[in-house]
Length: 119
Image 1 (cartoon, rainbow, N blue to C red):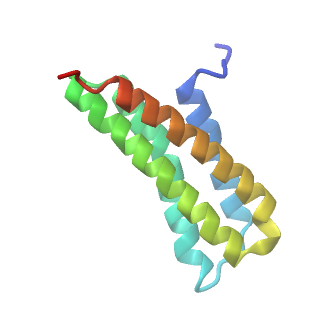
Image 2 (image 1 turned 60 degrees about the vertical axis):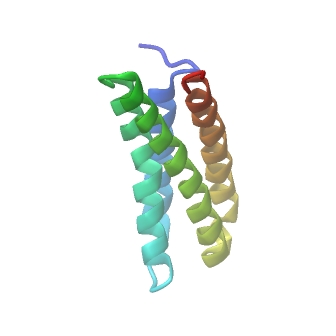
């Protein structure tokens, strides 16, 4: 199956893989260890939550899972910023990950907003 730029499952998987690859390269210290752990958790959970949203049992369940995608993508941006400070030599790839996390956050924010019931 060919991937398109709009295939969010593939896009979030690629993002998670990039996070894993970068974090495996980072030297662990007392400062970087918890930051790496948090980035791996938030960055890899975006795709998992999206898969759950895709199989949601109801509209409220879908909205909840999309809200988690939005939350985790915002959190991934935060950890990228802190890691860029802690490991300045990895600032460029972390900036790239931050940009992708930001784009994912904007996408999931739009999906969430459009799935909000109109009153």
